[in-house]
Length: 141
Image (tube, rainbow, N blue to C red):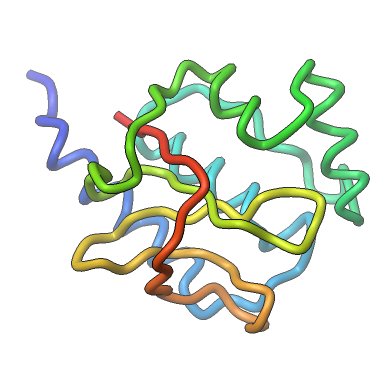
């Protein structure tokens, strides 16, 4: 018997919240790539997550992506077979990207009620955010 999509979405999103909410950002150990990796695995997707220490800078993270034939985080999500959607149609557990001043976009996970789990350049910790503009979005399940 398979688990209904909505149960899987809520369970995976709660596990990601439990693991990352309030954690201090540290590139390569507690960052958006690790958050997405855990989340996608909880959703049952096979996804490669960089080993701790595989990169220590944004150019290093971009290099890791390029070694997998992806020139951006968006290309990596596309390569995983995630379906692009309109940000307005996001459901709990879906992945969206925000603009960022860094080399990589800032991914967030929709948790419901207009809130998104993610890291923001104005905060040292993973937080529940209420952004108003999104670059792209993907259906996670």
